[in-house]
Image 1: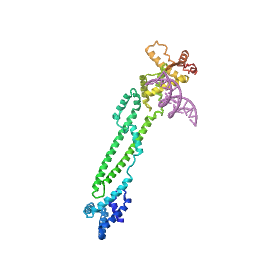
Image 2: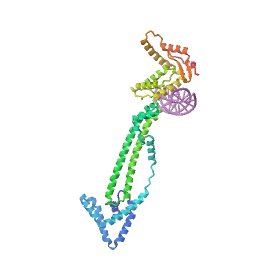
Image 3: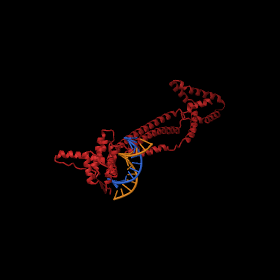
Image 4: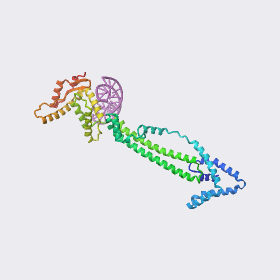
Length: 388
DNA sequence: ATCCATGATTTGTA
DNA sequence: TACAAATCATGGAT
């Protein structure tokens, strides 16, 4: 019995882990052989024992010797019978194993990953090169929403980078899988001349290889998903992660706001210009660029907050009014030395469809006073402002 | 820990 | 679609 187990290791154990289920089969061999050989079974037994011994000793011999022995074994008169029996047994055990672990359901985890990659446009069809050209095309298609794509062009670039890596890696794995599969298949086919290997077994081996490689692919998908998630959190979902604008940017925006207080609604072009200016001034710092929509947000917030509590902003208003007045006066002085009165900033504030303004005389006085005395305005504007 | 300023988002409207 | 208004959520000062 011990020898039988060992021969199974040597001949039949092809790394499939079938040893456990083999004992019964070997019993069958034994019975069949006894029944077939009849009386002179002892001599046969001895014969087989020799063969087994030679097989077990094969690894101790040199390659040439082994080849010679192999040839000898292959030519042995017992070989075809023994080989076919072994094949039969393996077929049986192989089938039982096959039935046990076939029909693996589609991994829900893998499906989730696939769906996500598809949704993020990583595994889906390439969108026109996936580069800046795609972003520009998308912007053009959106019509006037170029701002949005500027905001996310960096995101898109990074995403397409991820996609490219993903695809090249995936292709690499696929290629490796195919190469390995054909290699193993050739190997098994080659070996099937000396070992009991059925086509089904090769098929099964291929299945195992594919599963292994697809698990590697899953790792790739997993890390790709992670990368995308990180990217998202960095770019898209960072929307709420508020970063205050730089001092210079705020200054630029405030300058515009207070110098256009009567109509603090910059046109699209003006917004673009402001965004550009803010981004330029900010570029020397660490801050990110400021987009048109951010400028719009800023003006929206500013208008509503200014309107809600003009008094609170009066100091700021005076500051910027003075600033613009000084620059204006300076410009006027350069242009025309006779110009004596600096243009007074417009203190009226007009919202869409409604108008509320400071009492013009008082505000003018206060502004002028403050401008030239450096004094600070009182909170009286709050009560003076008329919101209709 | 708390408060306020502020950028972003949502909702309703014309 | 742009905007007002309300609201959310964070940054930063205290």
